[in-house]
Length: 251
Image (cartoon, rainbow, N blue to C red; front, side, top):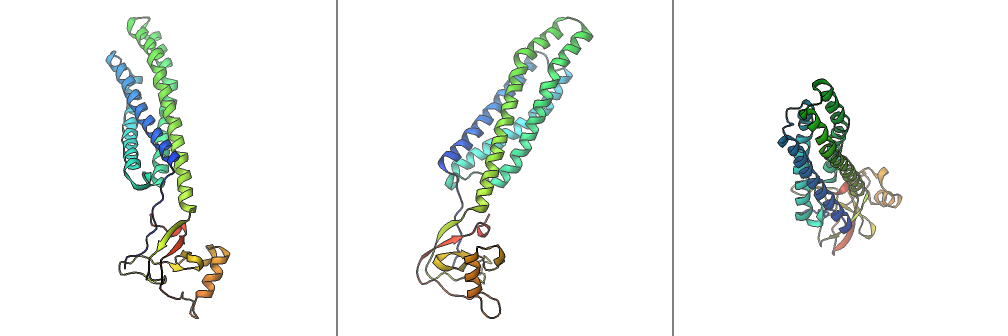
């Protein structure tokens, strides 16, 4: 007989829509930043050392972020429960992207205008340095603004990932136990843990230390142990509901 597998948790309607909106915003910001940076190159400013360093910092970041946003958006729309990618992965990846965008914002905020002024002082007030300073004033600040927007968006996504990870680790799941399901204390032929039945249909893994269970659950477990400290076994005569503790859920 198949082992009982608790259902996966999905995001609420408002939450998955918020996550999807933030992903769409992040992907759009990536396209805008790429367009603004590309516009600087079309004006013949690609040979500027500051611009080359900026591209080396921004281009890999926005490429990776755009792919990640696309993958998460597809998962949110395609997976049951609008679950998206595992929240643990969201926390780690979006934290890295937040740090990358923060670094890009710091570099972009302190490099352009001083570099343009230094170039003007060295070369003189010619058309090249004047054009660069003018472009920085017109297009450099929009780039900086959208990079800062990415910092905010990915920090928000990181916080949401932390929240969903916390909820996943602390939320109980109600499932139906099918008729004739074996109790815990053993493994099924495929090696999947079967859970021990508790009063009113509550179940927990028999191998879990009882010190981490609620008092009423510990009391029942102590009563259900045989003389050798092993849980008793039985089958459920009828379908029932069971409360699965979060650490009993499969990933």
